[in-house]
Image 1 (tube, one colour):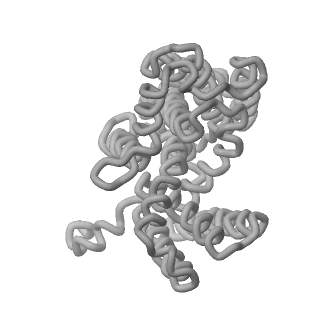
Image 2 (cartoon, helix red, strand yellow):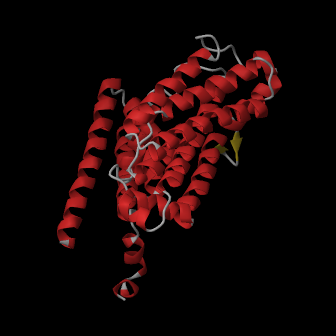
Image 3 (spheres, helix red, strand yellow):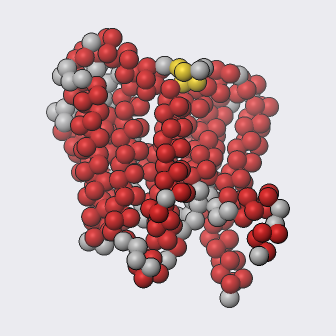
Length: 336
């Protein structure tokens, strides 16, 4: 009854994880304005478009990692699956395989890794850190071996310049309605998985497992099936980012996606996704990815050293997790 008496704004803020997402968006605005006052080119249209395109990779992998963080798990193989996706699709295209078929084969390979992660964590009940550490090395090894332990040639050498240009424009260089296609692809992925997480039974089960896995089991939730679905989402997101990196470079790079699993964690945690499970919104992941890329973009434009960039972002991630722990402790005390 009390919830019904709340104003629309308070009901909006009362949505689980919404307050953290709004704080992340507020931080984004502040950070952007601060960098803009220091370097006016930050406000330029060209920089904004490039910023949106660059943040798209972090947003997509952040979505995949956020699904797992909400369940109380993690996917260390995500970055390696990104590299595997890029190498498999690029290698096939350099051998003349149609880009659609190459992408489909890469997708199947990525989903197999997601399925294996689900089996190891959900069925065999291995710690997610150990299970995905193993598949991380496996996926990266496949990425190395698929083209004989070397980067691929330009994809245009296999499928021709026209087909190569279409592929690269669709995933990276092309624009639609003034926006880079990379960003539009990221928005499409965000909308689909936002709906699945917030409006479907699977989404409710993901939150239930993260909140209390034993209670979820007693409620009839299949922990194995739900965990596997979350890992499949992560694998799909890694696949998409792999195609984006392949399109950006016009070739396959064996080191593509290196450290992306950590970038994904940062995007989710900065946006209010709790690494302890059960809390957070993909809206926060959107904000977290934007904060991450705005920091990187702004620090680059003011000439900050790469080392300083990593320190600043690392401190923000630790602060975000510390804030989550403090908030959870306060909530437990109020409940008691």
